[in-house]
Length: 239
Ligand SMILES: [Zn+2]
Image 1 (tube, rainbow, N blue to C red):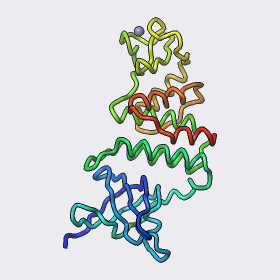
Image 2 (tube, rainbow, N blue to C red; image 1 turned 60 degrees about the horizontal axis):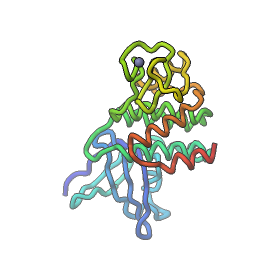
Image 3 (cartoon, rainbow, N blue to C red; image 1 turned 135 degrees about the vertical axis):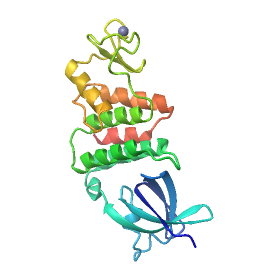
Image 4 (cartoon, protein in one colour; image 1 turned 180 degrees about the horizontal axis):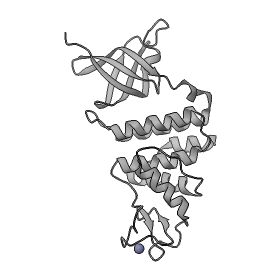
């Protein structure tokens, strides 16, 4: 029998099946998305219970048989348990996990997104109050890592300098005063710089409370991914 493999990852989703079993979707550093079956994980005596809970981060030990992974053990690094103490924070974490599920591919490491998710969960676990600001910043980085970043350093239409810039999400970035559509929300310089940092630095920095930014980023994300995510509605009802 082959030796088990070790993968560092986080549980994005769990689905119960049969009486005691659980299917996991892991986001691993080494291999991106990995589906693994955890046999007997829901028995009260199971040592795998913590390892098979959503948002658990750790080193997962997997056996492969017939093209299918089976969870053999896990060294838990973090359970992110504090997320469960606040419904809005948990809903936001669930939204981020849902978005990761949409883009993380099997066999493809996505280190940037892995780091982004962990940074976002750290804010949420600390009960960070600006959930919409955090979400807007997360979406900016998420789309940039997905090759769908907003053009933020020059006018999205004429490539000219950004004097009196406005957001123009329909065009995919900031537009100069001449090219912004009349319905574009205005953006002050401070807010633009915050957006630039959030979108292009390595660290996730929640945006200031930019009015309309969260809604615009949600609409932009759903347009680019060509999908509606009910997790946004669920989160908004809790805020
Ligand atoms: Zn322009």
